[in-house]
Length: 290
Ligand SMILES: NC(=O)c1ccc[n+]([C@@H]2O[C@H](COP(=O)([O-])OP(=O)(O)OC[C@H]3O[C@@H](n4cnc5c(N)ncnc54)[C@H](OP(=O)(O)O)[C@@H]3O)[C@@H](O)[C@H]2O)c1
Image 1 (cartoon, rainbow, N blue to C red):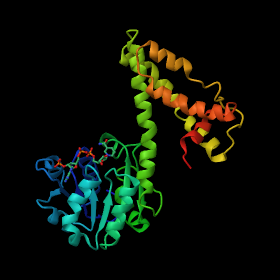
Image 2 (image 1 turned 90 degrees about the horizontal axis):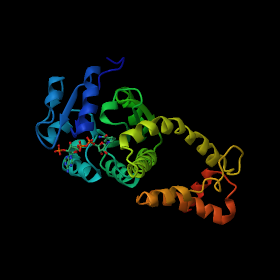
Image 3 (image 1 turned 120 degrees about the vertical axis):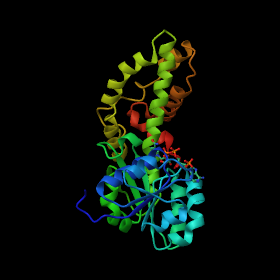
Image 4 (image 1 turned 135 degrees about the vertical axis):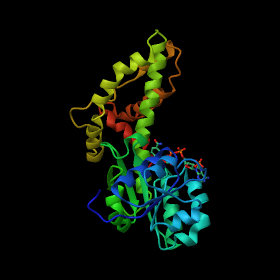
């Protein structure tokens, strides 16, 4: 149990993530109503004490705070638009992954209908919810965040980023961008290794400790980018970072070098512009369009 008053909450969307979020609210004593478009996904939650609403109107009417954990922006509108009148005077916390512009659109949609709105970006997989390492980013109404945070923190660390509803999804996608490029990079490496009979599993066993050890380097890159001195000492120079060998080895292994070529292009742009002695972080300037 938390030390806070129970807060009645409704969770709309009982996919993998929605079920994990609803399940985390129940042991803390928050009366939890759940609803899903397709039947049969609430069974475990009902056993754990949730009330399963049979209609979306009943679900929304059951709680002052409605959490949407649906597939995408369009599905949020599909679900909420028909119950706009019921939502007036209530709070929507949308943790569905959307683009920043879609979140801003939802915030404005809510504002003009008398609905308080908070946007969330979940930096966790369902198995991580309520466990160390789970982080949920929020933006939009600070009042909603302050009022609901005792319940929200049941899912993991909660961080409020600001009044612009687009901030949480922006940072969500900005964090997932390096995740996807790293995973794609691993698969590129696995294809290279396979050309000499090394299995992806064997490569993963060798790569994971190394990748874990170098991940904190993002703090160093961030210091350089924020400080703006790309020539600061202690950095690997762009000239030293030339990736020709990586491209050649990929080609020799009959692996499409598309990924590593992209990084090489970013490096070369800066070298050709006369910044070869600067550190690797300078490719930040290759990426920014303005
Ligand atoms: N799973 C993760 O690891 C993870 C991590 C971070 C963030 N997220 C985000 O959390 C959200 C939910 O993810 P999930 O893993 O729970 O997805 P999921 O298992 O695919 O579930 C999707 C949910 O959306 C519902 N839905 C889809 N289209 C709908 C529509 N038009 N009208 C009404 N309901 C609709 C589905 O209902 P039906 O059962 O009727 O199909 C289901 O409840 C996504 O935005 C995802 O990006 C997920």
